[in-house]
Structures are given as C-alpha cells and as structure tokens.
Length: 535
Image (tube, rainbow, N blue to C red):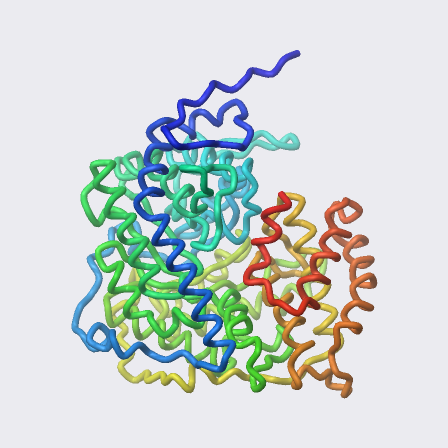
C-alpha cells in the first residue's frame, strides 16, 4: 500500500524548508502562516542576534568578576506608579497551572486535568525535533477547536466539557529552528512556534471567549522582553487583531532577569499577564553565571530549595513586584509526582507538594505549577484555603518586603556535597539526555518530573564542583574529572537497567555527551544547543 503523499507547499520567496513534509503538515505550513514567519524574521532576526551577542558579552564580564545589580538607567520605571493593562477574564483565576509537552495524549489529559490553565510546551519539556514541533501545532489547532481525540492501546481520549485555559510556551531566544531558512539563514525557533500558532488559532480562541496567551522563557533582560512586545504589535497588526489581544506571562528563570522584573513588566505592560518564578532554570542560571566565581558553590541539588536564602529573596521580590503592578504572580514547579506502589514514599512526596503550595499561597502568590494531573486537586486545595472564592489575591500588596541585591546574591547552602548527590546528578543527566535524544523531553526520573531545566542543574553542578575549591565531598574528597569519569559507566549501567527503553542506542551516547559537557574546560551555554544538532 502507498501512503498518501503530502501536498506540495507554496513557500514564500526566500524561504527554504529542509524538514520532511508528512501528510497533514500542509494544514500547518500554509502560505499565510509561513508568510508571517518570513515577515517577522526579516523584521526582527537582526535584533535577536544582537541581543544574543549582548548575552555573550555580559557572560564574559560576569566571568571576570562583575556582579549584577538593579539598573541605574531604569530607576524611574522601578519607582514609577504604573500598572499593566487589565487581565482578560480567562486569565483571572490561575490557582493551578499544569504543564507538559505538546504531545497529543498529554494535551488531552492536561486540558481535562481540572487545572485552571495548561501551559503547553514547545520548549523545555519537549524535544524540539521537526516532527514534535509540527505535530504539536496540529495538536494545538485541534485542541483549540475542541476536536482533538486519540485512540491508543484500546483507550479513547477526548476533551471534557470543561477544560483548562490554554497557554503556549514557544522556544527561547537562544534556540534556532534549523529546518527553516529565510534568506539562507536559520530562523528563531520561538518566532516560528509563535507565528504558526497565532495564524491558526488566535481568532478561533477569541471567538471562544479566551485569546492567544503565551509563556515566554529564558529572558535575561527587559530589552529581550521589548523584542517580544514589538513582535506582538506587528503580529496583531498583520492579523487584524486589536492591540493588547495577546497576553504573555514571563518566566523569571535567570538571575539577570531577577534584577529587571519591573522593567520586563513595563515593556510588556499592554500584553502582560504577570511573571512566574521558574525555579529550576533559575538555579541553573545562577550556577552558569557565576561558574568561575571562587566563592560560589552550591550544595547537593536536593538541598537547594525555595527556602534557600537566594531563592527566598527571588520569590518574595517577584511577588511584591507583580502585585504592585496589578499583575499575577505565579509560583514555580513542584517537580514531585505521585509514587505508585509505595504509600509511605508517596505520602512524603505529597507532603512536599502541599508545603510548597501552602507557602506560595500564604506569601500571596496567585497560583502555582504542577507537572502531573494527580497533583491538581492537592495544589488547588492549598490555594483555596487561602483565597476562598477569590480568583486571585493581586490585592495582597507586600510593601513589607524589601529585597536587596545582596539577598538575591546570597548563594547558600554550600554544604553538604555528597557522593550520593554527585551520582544523582550524573544519573539524572544521562537518563534525561538519553530520553531527549530519543524524542521525549519530559521524563519521570526518581519520582521527579525532569525536563531540560533540571538536567541543566545536574550537568552544571558537576562541572562547577570539579572546578571550585569548595567542590569537596563531605568525606573530604575533592570532586575531580577523573572521579566523575569513573562514576559515569556505573551510573549508565543503572540507567540502562531502570529507564524505559534503556537498552536503546541513545543512552551510551548520552553518557558520552554528559562526560564531555561536565569535564570539558569550556562550559557549554545550554545543554540543548549541541544536542539539537544531533536530532
């Protein structure tokens, strides 16, 4: 039998697509959608590249010993009396947000989960191979129109009458879409994800009482937020939408963005739906930015919690900043997931989630993230205890909070660093990378839902412990490259035994990559950049 061949695409002038065009892809890669991709690329790609070059320069200054601070040139914005534009009704109540990749079953289960909103992810919990990006767009189109369904393993999946509000996370500024060239150069992965979604779904969403809502990842400055804002303005104009239709929540997941939260909200003030405390990436960003700092060294990953001094300062500053500007403050991810077949361990994990959400709700946050449908009810309960029947608690202003530069940079705890913690990092790194290379970017490992952010912590910690004088195990042994190299085959064997499909070819390759990235002299900016070239 022959499969139906895909329709040839009508590409705008100057565009080349090198990815396979499978049947059904033509419904996404339409002339209208691709024309918007070209228009936005020609208008904004040079600015993206300039901003990425600024990141590199800034990183060099930090490597040389500079420490970040609040910007003197934007003091007026921080001290000003402005607020963001009103929040649409569909985004007023976001007590529990569930997140997950754009895979079809996940999309249905997340929309049905009972959460207020669902952040569907083209970024960190998704391997951005060509098929995942395009089938993800097909899934979005079907989800918005409520026609999405799936028959799998004798089960039927379809949407309930009541579903979560959809919010989409495109890729960050650092990621290209290598399968699409405009005028001979790769384009921005984020612009590609955003433009396709907008053309196919924005008007449909508005007709159904919501709108095109986004989460914006990995930004390091307000100028990067300004770039998104300018893209929104042009896109709304191109598609004939009223200005301010698009709403975006920014993930504060880099230490540099923490010093520019007011400014980021200000840049997006017509399009803002608040900020989110993206904790895992934030920890990774701190390690990355101060990787050469002799005084910087964090303890085992499991010990760096939201109550660590620098994390507490960041969480409280974000909350105060948002509410002062009438913006929602959304708490970060409880990465714990339900543990089947072990009630005692499950009770401990659920207690961890409960404490996390209770702390956020009591502090004043309007909602928080979970990674698994089984946690929605528990998280909802903690926010409801505090909020009662109010949709949010933006009216809870926190003038009592004063966060200083010193507090944001108070990187503790430094101990313990243990052999178990080192092995854990190596194990998670290999397991996650192996899964990612096999096409799955969201992986349950040791009862935690891991994505690229948590794998980044594991990899960057090992790199930094090798180099820091403070990278000493509690038994007095110094962490060295040789020690890590000796542990890698041992941890690979455990992963091959424990991981679903662990006997596949991607896991030995993952161990190789982990070794290169954790022991090399140079630090790779993002794990996913060299990996992307392999898929």
